Image (cartoon, rainbow, N blue to C red; front, side, top):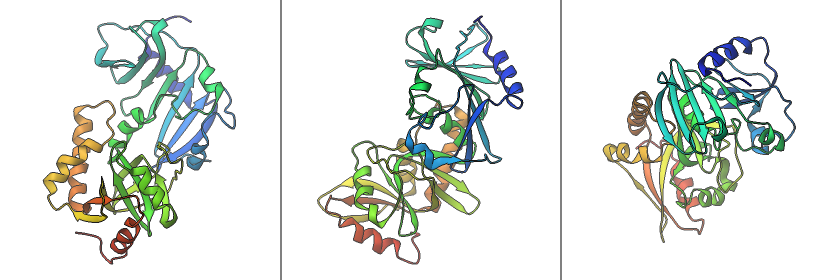
Amino acid sequence: MSRSNFPTLLNSFLSSMNTTPGHTRNYSLAQISIQVESDLKFSEDTFEEKFKKFQIDTPGRDLVRIRHDFSIIPPIIDDSWQLIYKKKPWAIYKKDKYWIYLGILGEETSTDLWITGIFNESYTEGLICHPDATRFLQGKNHSLTLYPTDQIILARVLADRQAFYIHAAGMILYDKGVLFVGHSEAGKSTTVTMLKDEGEILCDDRIIVRHWPDGFRIHGTWSHGDVPDVSNSSAPLRAIFFLEKSPENCLEPIENRREIIRMLPFYIVQPLVTADWWEKTLDMIQQISQEVPFYRLKLDTSGKVKEILKEYLSQDSVRS
């Protein structure tokens, strides 16, 4: 196939989407509809089982559209392309109103590209080109984009909707939404496993926090860790707990809002970071620090933390 200019290709692609949608699957995440299109048919196991919890019949008005193409067209990179980021496996460029993500193995030559994505400025429409259909056809893919993670794209989408991904386990616990925050080995999976019989696990590793007119809510995602339980449910956010392994079980309020604002960015999932993304995200961090109570949750593996959390969440007011 001949070499093409990607912005021109995407322009033509977006014009044709309304008339030639191909095969489609629709999903919902934090009340955002994600429509995945392909010229190839989807099978029962094109994507992992976890996605069935998020699959919907009809997309809503807030729509992200992604199309897979399986005959990659090598890009023409010239001085009009602005290099934004380059570190294997990604080289990211800005060209006019488009973002171009080149999955690179070495230099950005046609033989070194393992995947290419072209997205409009808001990341709500995009074309993902593959050198062949092998990965799609082998099935059980763990991301809708066939990227290592969908977060690289969706985290950009979320910022425009007053939302972000956070490294946290989320549950609807005693009818209230709670977050257990921590990086790997912090005990997120262990904590929700201990509490599994007390509520609904939304996800043990990545949760979406989104601000709505009536306040912050947490939304389940498919980006789980050791615990495969996921849910498309959501709940008003009632408390955020920073996990600490300890020989005792107790809650310690974090009263210093500056400390919260300093700590929280380390747990936000960062996509391609730009000034506007940071500005939107930091605004939400400032707001959540004022509206939601934060605690250090010290716990062991005995399960006694259940009693502490049940007593705390059963109070009429959980605001500090």
